[in-house]
Amino acid sequence: MAAGFARDGLPLVVARPEFIYGPGDVHVLGLFRAIQRGLFFYIGDGANTCHPTYVDDMVDGLLACLRRGAPGGVYHIAGPRPLPFRELAETIAAALGVPPPRWRVPVPLAWLGAAGLEAAGKLLGRDVPLSRTGVAFFSENRRSTYAKAERELGFAPRVELREGVERTVGWYRGEGLI
Image 1 (spheres, rainbow, N blue to C red):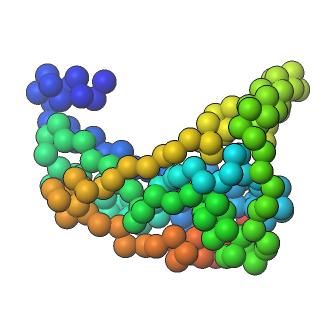
Image 2 (tube, rainbow, N blue to C red):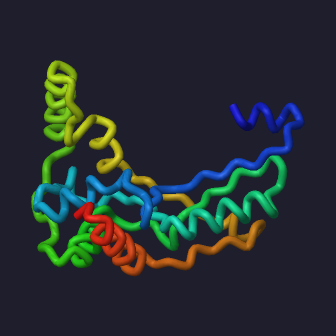
């Protein structure tokens, strides 16, 4: 839709941030809590990739898009590197001081379980701990490159995963969320 507006002459820039986490963000709090409580499991072997982006890096990327983005340009704003979900979970576990997740569930079984949970949640009017959207998120590769944003906007993420996760855990603890 935005691309159509750009073709019609609206001077806009499209920013595509990847998996954002950090202090102030609670949309991934459930992931941190599940790992802390020993309830997180890998869907498949944990080798599928994601591209975590620390919130400060995301803000820097959005500001770079605003200040230097080419009208009609599309820029991926992402963390330093894509990594396997296993590494993400192990890094979170280390920051929380708990053992890393060790259980694996095959993708088809996770899909079936999530569908059942969604049906039960709908009947009971409750949120579910795992949805089919969640299964898709954790069982597919999600990676991108910020090379264009680096080249054209001067954007480069600065916060590595371990540091960002430690800051996030510190904020969650300070807020009494974990």
